[in-house]
Length: 97
Image (cartoon, rainbow, N blue to C red; front, top):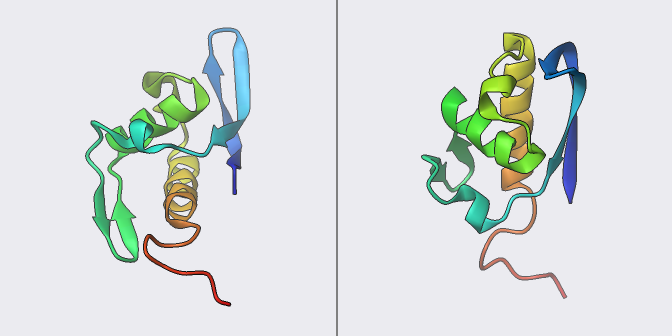
């Protein structure tokens, strides 16, 4: 999956623009640098500050704007981002032949 699109139930304001969906590009390792993300083999933990910082990098929407998000939308965003970050083949996993 190259990108993730999240529909917001409650739009947020960014200047004069009303944002009703987030178009999130796939992160690179560089995007993760400097963020406090706790990984385990089958999950990861993102606190709200880290979530908004990462999504801000991936959408070019400042974290303080993302922090206006309704809590229900923030929970959906968190769950979807975990699936997005953990999707794909695991390191060291081989393709079946």
